[in-house]
Amino acid sequence: MMKCKVEKFEVEKKSFQVKFEGSNGGTWVSVTERSRGFVVSVGFGKGELDWLTEHLKKAVELEDSREFIRKIRGKNKIHLMEICFNNRGRFMKITEIATRRKPLLFVIPEGVKGNGWEVLRRVILSVQDYSDQVGEDSKKTFGDTQMRKSIYRGGRSYAEVVAEDGLKSGVPLSARKWARAVICECKEKVQDWTHEGKAIARMMGVKGMVSINPISAFKGCFFVSSARRAKWF
Image (cartoon, helix red, strand yellow):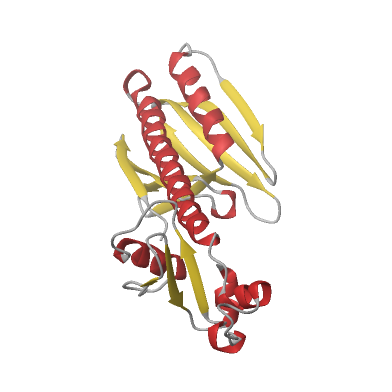
């Protein structure tokens, strides 16, 4: 399940939400404006977020009398940042322009001395840090799985053992009988196969643990539901 992080804040009675969406569909983070029954959400890819935070910082440092327009073009959409004026002061419009649908935009007031824009920038950075951590955790989990998998890849299915080794101790082995068995081999001596049994169960997407029959201090054998599943290992 994809982990989620949501940050919320307010600027001049307007509510905003910044949410980590993951990488599905190219959207990494969404910014949502909620005000007077109006809700709009604009999505940003990972590269677009760097552009957004950079120009939010520049906007805060900009002189009060100056306007500001910046644009970034993505794979299938354009993001436009504009600083505008009205009788209440400055505000920022961020517009998402894509083909075959109406543009989406949210408006965030400047706040006191650019505080509104600075809060948005800091919240986005916070969510970005979280998304980076999720990415590192995913890589670590994948790496652990691959490492576990590599431990058992020394394990051939018994069908392969029969095909390659033929007779063992002068007694014919039935390939059909042993086609569902997998031999796993560890680099270190194993006293208790419980941990390995749980790791294999996680790899197979089942609860509990797989029962491993020790063959030696370094090798064990377990059975799966089909010869095809055995070859997966």
